[in-house]
Amino acid sequence: MKVGILGGGQLARMIALAGYPLGIRFIFLDPSVGACATTLGGHLHGDYHDENLLAELAERADAVTYEFENVPANVAGFLTSRTQVYPSPKALAVAQDRLVEKEFLNNLGIPTAPYATVDSLNDLQAAMEKVGYPAILKTRTQGYDGKGQSVLKSAADLKLAWEKLEGLAAIVEGFVNFNREISIVAVRSVSGELAFYPLSENVHKGGILRVSESRKNDSQQAKAEEYATRLMIELDYVGVLALELFEVNGELVANEFAPRVHNSGHWTIEGAETSQFENHLRAILDLPLGSTVAVGHVAMVNFIGGKPESEDVLKIPNAHLHLYAKAPRKGRKVAHATIRTMTLAELEPLKKRLIALADEIDDS
Ligand code: AMP
View 1 (cartoon, protein in one colour):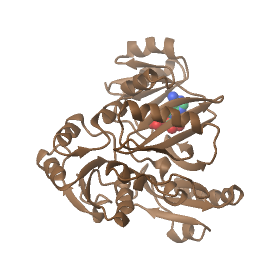
View 2 (cartoon, rainbow, N blue to C red):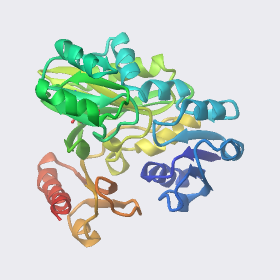
View 3 (cartoon, rainbow, N blue to C red):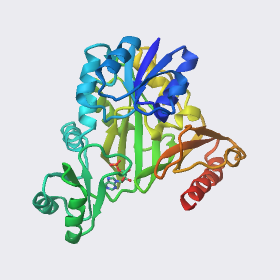
View 4 (cartoon, rainbow, N blue to C red):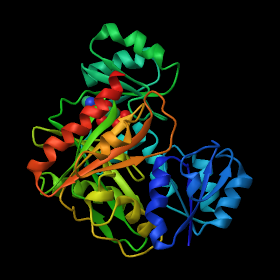
């Protein structure tokens, strides 16, 4: 069995690492020579639009998936005409445009922050009447990890924020004064089997995920599962999907969803009976899904822009280090580490030690 992956970054790498024990082999299409997954399989080196390479990927793989949602619609369409592509191009189309995504979520009865589309400075000024301050101006497409976003605190911020967009289509959304951020990682197979991981509770720093912790028996688990189910059924979804949510005074408000394996599910490698990466493969190859039950209590910490000395992580009891073999660069995720313990009380001090290592990198 061979799986083709568009993209050869750390998500593709972790999918491949999960697939090897199942005898699955991989082929990656990625424009960069040293893409970190490509030591784990074949590498088609070139542009995502190159139809010869796409045809070769479709030819050599039993199914194709991807590690990022900004796959152009024509690329997904081209592949779909030749092989099985999961998740479907429809899921991509919805997830890659914040306006379409918010409308889609609201139509399914999944609440979001108030929002308005913005195509000019006049639009933005008018939209603020509806959305109110504070708000966030975001590009409709191509944004991730807080990129292409400006916080609007008053009318004085509008002109500069608009100019920073350089004419890109945008959306303005009300700033959600959340109590906490959570996400649900869900999976649906070709046969329609569904499974959900325990919620992840997430802390971001500068718009980038910093810490994710598994939450057993969380009071919001059932609601989050219900929302994820609506989404997956409506999209006839196959694979892993992550729905990011804000909790506000006991209510859930959706931020966005990712049609792929997700950083807030990395803890499942050590912390769940079956990882999100293995279950993504099982789902797209129509194999029975594995148990999503959490094993102990787990926290994951991202190392961004640089990585600590391996010894410093490995001397922390119960720590598991994942290096992505990527060159450090500001804002780039280059590694993560997970702590798993049998009790919550044991987890806390060990998690703090990991966070301290991540903070040292920020300060250096
Ligand atoms: P995004 O790129 O939309 O996932 O945003 C990255 C992070 O910015 C989120 O995880 C939140 O921490 C924060 N954020 C984004 N949108 C909002 C919002 N409307 N209200 C409050 N915080 C937000």
